Image 1 (cartoon, rainbow, N blue to C red):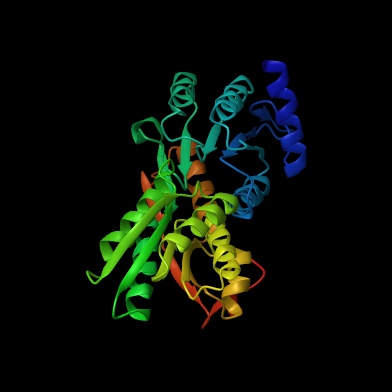
Image 2 (tube, rainbow, N blue to C red; image 1 turned 45 degrees about the horizontal axis):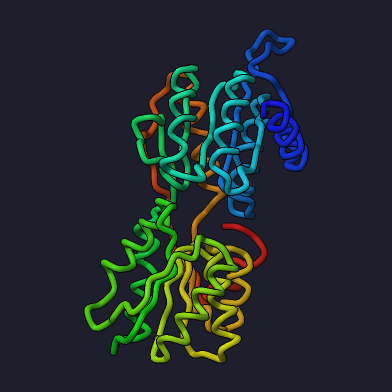
Length: 311
């Protein structure tokens, strides 16, 4: 297993263009060179942007970072973190595949004395990490519900594509449900696993079962794009609202399609904050135990201002 993980990590690190280093070293000037570990649940521009934002700051400080995509596999991520520990990294930036299943790795990091900055999706036990940094995910759901309330003042049938295994998506759904006006009826709520394929499949079933649907809230833009595909295929007038502000969703929003809006996150700012907090932890400076980066609505009125890049 160790040999397999080591090979997979090398491939992942080379693919990300990260520097490869085993633990802290001394530079020629005698200053300690730090090595960070960064692991996230699945490949996406969003997490790559966060990682790149951190990497730029880390390398500007003369340090290095090992970046590994966990490929939506909790056991693989646990093994990756075990490898981080073996390499004696100074700090780990963690976005968990499974908020509960990552616990053994967190305990191992604690025993090794390696601090953890948890980002985007919280681990189940926040006492095992030093800091949690994320978008205002509840607020993202609130923003989408407000848009639905405004667009459909008469109310109607609404569906939700959620992702219960992911705490960020749980928070978004919570914000949406609590803000939706009383004259709306949630007629379906399905787990789309945060991915386009299941989003397409679940949305297709929902559209068939509920022909009077007016809107569908998707806990992220990946499942939202799947739902959008179902809407186009069915020639439906249902409006899609997602969360992320991903480049592909902004493209179709700007065209005035049925993808009506997305509550935009800023992965660049999440990365900047992660790096700031990480260095503060290592240097003994004050740092936030929790920090939430605000979200905002991107719709057809402003989508063209954000095309082609992550905000």
